[in-house]
Length: 382
Ligand SMILES: Cc1ncc(COP(=O)(O)O)c(C=O)c1O
Image 1 (cartoon, rainbow, N blue to C red):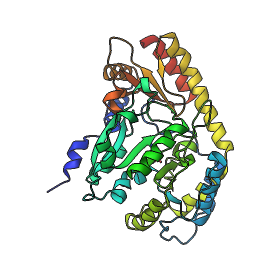
Image 2: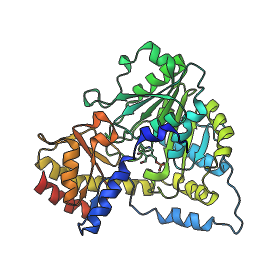
Image 3: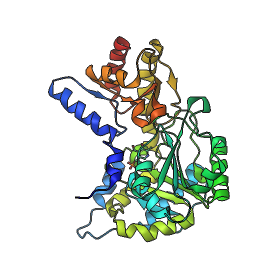
Image 4: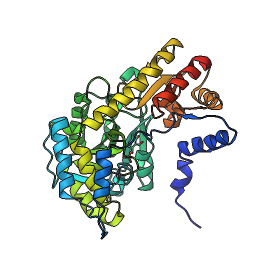
């Protein structure tokens, strides 16, 4: 049977490899503490769960791709409170089934293969879905390195005129997974200006804007010209709702209109009971403050143990991740393999791209008690 050649180039999703090792060690009786995947294991707030249950109707119908008006209004209200921006709930917002599917599908909606703009730019180390979605849509992909010396921002000055002209989508992700870096508003503004100048879409994946420790990070929605900017948000990390699948795209009216046209065919609108629970989630900040506090405490358990072993923390101003330098004499995969044999599952930086070499990532998803045990193990092993 013929299959898409893109399948072969994407290989196994790195976390699937981790799952395999986990199963082997669990079967051998090793106690595992899993700092691998960024899947929050905090409970969803009871207020949100109750809203979900109360929204289940006897009759079930297809949810509309445009989403419930009350959800779009709740999202617009949240954007106004959180970022001080006015977003029109009718023309500038569309709910999505989490953000991953919307990220994956974006190139299908934007790319005109014969139109002279075949290129999708992304950054690495990074979340793999931008590139995979682009490749399945027939795009060319170029990954720009995120280097610590540039604050883990792509070097925009190094991009030549021809590349800008060939670009259809530029993906950015701040606060960044895996480096935890945040971007200043000037960076978003500069990219939005470049997007208008060279006619590409600035796609900003903002899954982690709500998990911060000092200052609330900015959004690309705050730029002065939003005509070529689309922001991808989600309740997954903010409200520990990965299993609900609820997010949104906001920004460019032209893109939102295109998504309203495209998405009914894809059939990925969140169920109406999920949308009603999402209204409650976007309208409440107290549970988000509690969630931030939980991640802060876990960081405070692990950081002293890492510091005592001379492990340098790079980036990591926000998100649920710690991006750490690998100790001298070892590479990131060797370190991850060694820790795994002692029950600590961590991600080698190379999982996220070649510029992740020399780093490793801890996702702060285990419980505080598990973090305490992990701190002891790290003090022994590092
Ligand atoms: C950078 C980034 N973007 C987007 C997502 C997708 O999240 P969801 O589909 O749950 O909204 C993730 C999930 O881990 C992520 O790390």
